[in-house]
Length: 538
Image 1 (tube, rainbow, N blue to C red):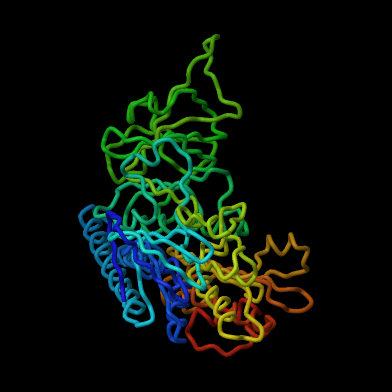
Image 2 (image 1 turned 90 degrees about the horizontal axis):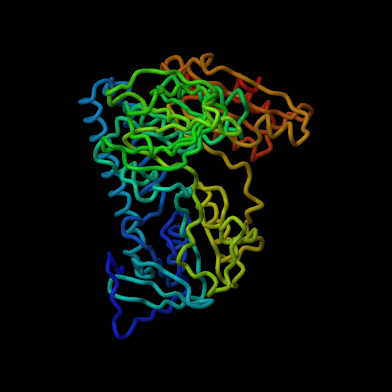
């Protein structure tokens, strides 16, 4: 059953009270799976979800599934040449957004009814906050509802982390990933603040649609946690798509631009020209020189101003103030200040656990130093009979980890002699859906070296894989780390078409403690990308 709520909240004279076996706060993967399992076991369950637009959780509404729908549409637009003219770009983008909305709406409806149609489950749409160790109040459109539960499960996910930049909250055209995936009109120019994997997925996607994309990275190293050769290959792929990078770039302020777009004040360390004026003291388009972003960190290329909306974000150099002796005043260390004008800005600076407004202190639930709900290896919080699942507990932010968190919790509720714990979880793989997907599991070479392990490196160019040639997708590389004396697979990095499928084979081998020779000798079907593992581990 369901108690719905959209917007305004009124307070009735008498608040209804529900007593239940289990309360799950948040409709994410781990929580909704646990709700169905508890219901099947005959338990009474209440699921509280803050928004009707989030039934089913982050993944199906604003995360992995809508973004992958758009990524596939963008790839199709690139293959068909639909990204070549303004008219075809707009049509392809409009169709992609329409399809994305269809998919998410369908999945959201199915997820809602999968729970709400069960007699043992009550779905309440409203914001929940703790009023005591086993009591919660849910603010609904019809008024507050008090819920008392024997066991409570926090599954509220994560929310985009927004840096403290003046104007970032008030300037039109500045989006998180949620807003950028729901635009009606495609931006011709896009600046992305942050070059983590979320930002890079969006850079690749919008470049395929035909948007001119510029990525701002706050330091000098691209993907610093990845091996240098892998990071270089990923960057080369993105640059081949037309994505441009500006390194050592700190965004100082954001404001509306004169042309209706967005203007960023960007300080770039290491450039040979300094600036002491604020960006807003020089109107967009009136700077001393316009600079096309080439990805260089210490030089700029002066070009004439452009009026072509499909060009990359225009960079206007701000004049330095002269010192008393008439010489330009340079920042220490050398720093140049630019005005960067664009149509839209994506803030992709990570996600933070969503605990705001939960009043966790009322239940005795503590947070970690990073703001996540503090849990032990069984995902128990610091309060008795309260657990935290998914992104809110500070673990890896993947839907499949939230699902595995459900397994951890359920193993405690179903009478298992030995519960499954977070420490039992092995070799978590990950995939980033670029034009050529990047997937990895286990240690990379950088990490194996830091751990003092004795290892050998296996490499294979994707161009050597017959199926990749047949698919006309020969770009990329495969790399694996194997312990020298034991043959134990330490990790693998696959920048390859279909890597998101193949990486699961490597993960399975690692989970089973199979040596590298197993993947070297296993019989695969042909032609497939998976059979490349024979050669990679040879």
